[in-house]
Image 1 (cartoon, one colour):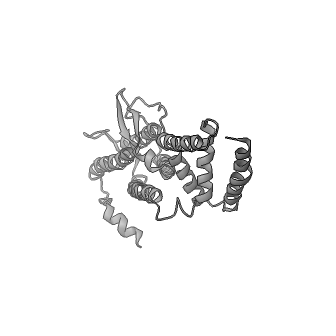
Image 2 (cartoon, helix red, strand yellow):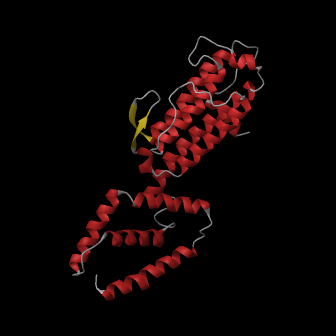
Image 3 (cartoon, one colour):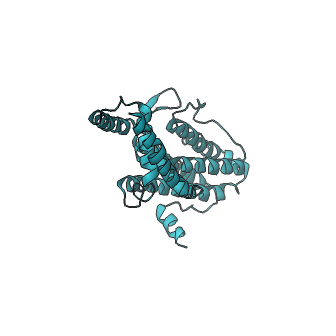
Length: 266
């Protein structure tokens, strides 16, 4: 790129774009989430390669010096700043619609899962300790073990989604004996998972990650499937816990998704 062209780019295009960015409400968290979402989309390898090829051809056409990677990044940054949020991230844009549709569906599942867990904990914290620790002929053996297992699995799969190592080697690791403390920790972990999910782009949701399972095995699975599995896994173990609770004097606990939907309207 000639010195004149560089000066024009830096002093005119870039400054104008930055001015437009600073005029946005940068304290609007929703706006910032959308901006980060677009940034992740534009920073994908295939986007960078396509942009680099396009700019390379333009450079050759105008006899500019060879393109470098920084020019590509700056160009895409200017695109984001200039057109965000009215064009690229408007409600009608393909990127926004795809991210919102998939993310909202998974967040709804996570919200339902949290509600159902809360319905169980509300009842279980009132049980005497001997009922909570009572051994049953079922998977995980007791209510205490089952509820701790749900928290362990949340932590394992969150670590896998973030492509980090987890420290668990036992499905029946007991993290909390006190059910109120366990409930609080479970709610906190669920909120962390929800916040993590909100910030995932559509590409990241469908990206396959290598997951380390307790016991030494591994599996390759997408983040969207991991989130779906967390909800299904919770339902599976709540069913087992419900069977254990059926042996007490407690009434059945309603956990159907239709009950959750109805409660949202009241």
